Image (tube, rainbow, N blue to C red):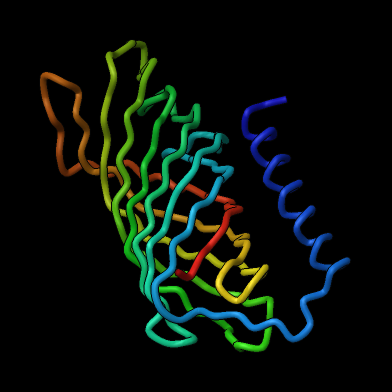
Length: 208
């Protein structure tokens, strides 16, 4: 079984187990909140597609700090790290350790009397990756670092254990380019290497 399948199976099992818990132990009348400061941590399965290469899978983890200015709108910073074996051999093929840093807004379909709260995400930010065991064309290179901007959209749902503690299940899709490549002795700028990443997240969120 591939690393990506193991990550996806583990996250799917966690989501299904929690859904079963809520079905067998209903939370009738329990309130939920989306206001104020919140802290989140999640595990994630991920995929990365670079230029015209095949999508490659892996996994990682991340965190989020946000503030709900009202029941509907939350502003946040989110940081994610994933590791995948990906790349087009005509560009850079190898093991990518990829980080996302994003500032975004989350829009909740909120009702304080519900224990299930769906949401939509939109975010802008940057991605940076270190690529090891690099192959490009007919050459093998030392570690290569790439970076660039990204735009992300996503969505998901909170399932509340208490008014201030919830499980989060969601997905986020990012598109952008790597426009700077650090080869060690030289740095190349103003490039246009297309890359799309997708992240499926399962985690916990707490409103302290």
